[in-house]
Length: 184
Image (cartoon, rainbow, N blue to C red; front, side, top):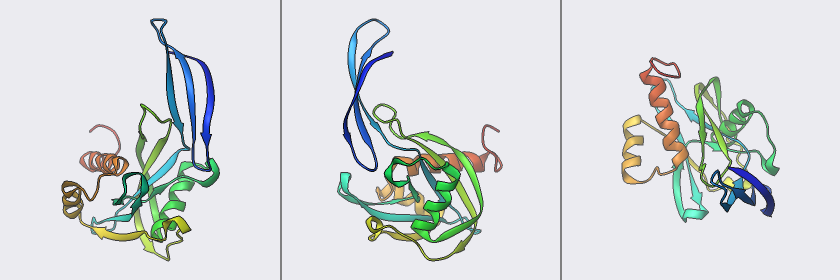
């Protein structure tokens, strides 16, 4: 597939939307609408007892509150290193500082419509401090959940965020492989 032309149709501090004219391998023409958002970091905080720390907030596009792992991007479409962004998001949303941060993997958010990619981290050796939430996160709640409680929340639909579900799958694979990324 070849990009023939591209034009930005929308932009704000968090994303741009572009329309690309494309030529497919068979020579036919088409268009793609693409949402460009910066790379984000998602953090799975896990304490010594195996509990997971989640945050809950209202998500306007789906008009519902959702429990998720802490995650985010930098404002103004900045592109800090994902390691730094993970540390920042964890402290900002939860007040937790990690003594150890381990990369679990990388996920594509919605590759059929978005270029955004996320880096998933496991945060352990945690110490609690004050959350440093942005004004847009003022309604955020946080809580600790056992894996069984977390999985029940998935069953009930309280956890429906695709990135959180993918991060949990990466965590389960890591744990199944004896604490290592990749296959056994």
